[in-house]
Length: 115
Image 1 (cartoon, rainbow, N blue to C red):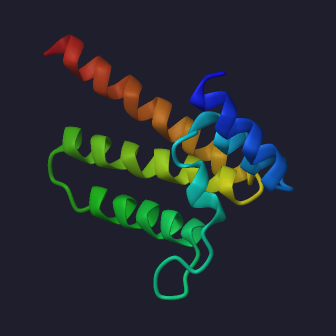
Image 2 (image 1 turned 180 degrees about the vertical axis):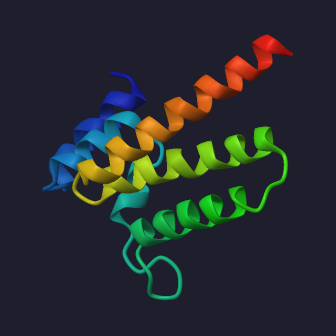
Image 3 (image 1 turned 90 degrees about the vertical axis):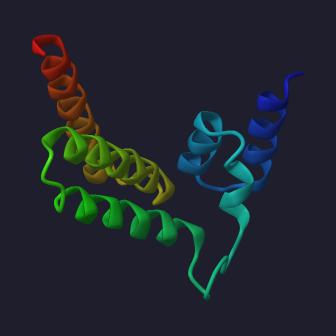
């Protein structure tokens, strides 16, 4: 049995939320981090992901170069997607940021084709 499947089955037994099990299936090596409580400064790991996503979004809007803006914004979107799944699957967060990520990828590839 692969390590990936082993971690996934352990997650099924340790969690009560299907979104956490889904998250463990997507990111098996980050799965143990779901079980850490009060990781840093009394703030849970899930909240730190949300803060990191917000920070990436804010930093992206400070960029003058549109390519850099879209790259950093894509990192923020990926973090928000992870955050949405960690919040017992908050679909509005996930759907919105999947759309933003695909729009950024589309315009980044379109820009590279025309250059």
